[in-house]
Length: 364
Image (tube, rainbow, N blue to C red; front, side, top):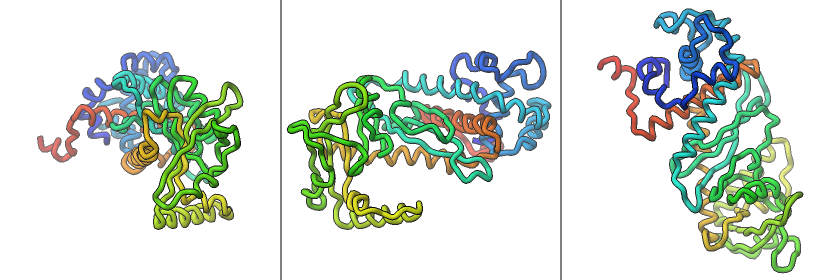
């Protein structure tokens, strides 16, 4: 999505925006004056999305706006306005995602892949922003998004949960409190764990479960499960299933090699426990046996690659992680504008709207 497409198809894009998006510009403080070239919400949004879509500089964006007759504004004025627009763009993102959620069909299990990705400002050696998302399957549409700074931890507790939702997350989401948040709202959780990340107790004798002791009973390629419970800091114990799949010998060797390489890259010495754990896929889920077999639990977790694909699309196609802004407030505006571009493209794709190449459009 570039500036040419925005110009040619702007009326079509406007139809995809939520009701009240113009009024929210004033409510959120993005526009506080009643005259001037940036007092029009439509022109302002076109500038913000045009910059995000084209990855252009402030100077190139305002020069393009002047040449096309959109508005005559300086790059300094646009930069100052960017500082006030993040809350407005966040309002648009939230409402677009709320409309997506409302349009989803009801189902006994609605799968939500949960994950986060990071972005850094120019010259930064750390992650400055973290985007937390849920991706609905099978459409791979974003149904929830929250942009935080680097201190925004990854947890299911950030997510709105509806009865029947199945939230699938990696190891970082596998805490008793995070899972308790999902269970208390009528949802189900499926998370990957390692030998020590999630304390579990056997429901048969109340003894503490050692995941590796259970896993060692399996031959390569076998899987099993045992009923367990976890104990959040507040509330009652939560019953669930500890599912283990022993990777085939060749896959296990690759997984152990990958674990050693990752640990060393981070300056850590790989421990015996982590190396041994790499031979297994260890999962905890609150989904009952009658709804999902052990094999289906393992197969469902493997669908997490879909959220990685969604992130790759954001970063390779829309260059989500290549911030041009050094300031936190303008960086937040830029990232949210990128996210709106991604949501618009998803909506157009779901409606089978053709996006013709610029040269074809010009020839027409």
